[in-house]
Length: 487
Image (cartoon, rainbow, N blue to C red):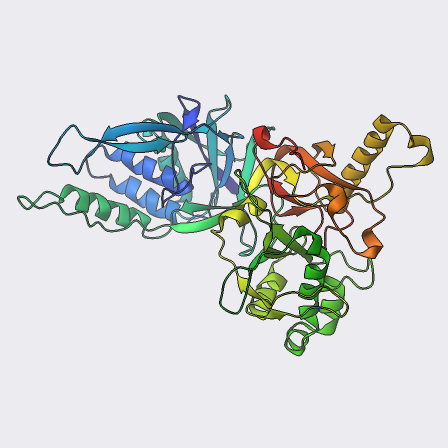
């Protein structure tokens, strides 16, 4: 019978300060490996771990990564403070600046981790009970100031998730977007014990401080909320490897050039003409629900930006296996884009596979409740019916209905509040009328759309009649930064 080892950790404050392993950004939710470390630290207390607890931790290392249920948190304001400089020999009172930006938990301070196991497996129930009892000794999770109380239990049912709490589940599709969180793996306990032993030996030699330490062993795991969407991204470069920026008005020909790569013999030989026609070109219209979306990604950030297109993404439908994206990543990487007949002349452009750590890309592939369109949404219908003419309120109400229809057509089932605007929500984007879709899409009404979902969702997101051709591309934003900008 399937059982759940459920560890519940409640913070004493509504702020969390833990960072990713490289310290570049906030880590939320706290990774399972961080919980693994907290279990060891809370039960060791300067002494060796008991044999039964060590065996239970060895067992936990081999479990499938847990499902995480956490509050819908948001980033707080950055605070600049000064801390004692630990490496200063000349002035023991010298201080160094340190920027702190906590994660705000919005009043909900409970995080839960659910591992699954078979109770009939040899010793599984005893190991699970040992870990559950050990959770009572957790004292903090994150920084030393992130005080927390832990408890564990064995449950036959999965805990209920009530909005706005968010469920993060491990995803095995390599090309899916989401969060990369550290999880324990075989060897994690031994590596942490070795690291602690090296820490204790750092002052063994007089006048010598040993800073080298054995690294901790863990496994990065992709976590998603809701449904996952496999994708692969490229950078637009010239022959020298320099980035090539493209104007918003050239979205349609850019998408056409990328789609035209599928006509090359090497791609046809690898994928077959049938897959290319149905899933890349979308022929016949409506003949396949597995169509790949070609999404140019304008450069966006919180500060000023020119908004030019320097990246492009290929995304399969939600819950796909990601195999086609992996194939396209290999087939399209390094290929030159060829302008179509009668299209505007482009400089030489090549596709270069983009790393997942790209900051702009993370705006399109992150997890958030609030999303705003970077390119306008082409609503799948008409907002200017005869009965609506002259009545702006009725016209907007009709447009909101069409936006909800666009969500359903894109396979997004999470309900959302819709806000429409002709002017963009992002700096660098253009007024909705300034975009040039292909002739067959020109008649659809265009709006910039902001969506506030009831629960957090994972990108990339694109909605509307042009969602496969670069229109209706959404980016994750903080709720306080989604006001329309003048254009």
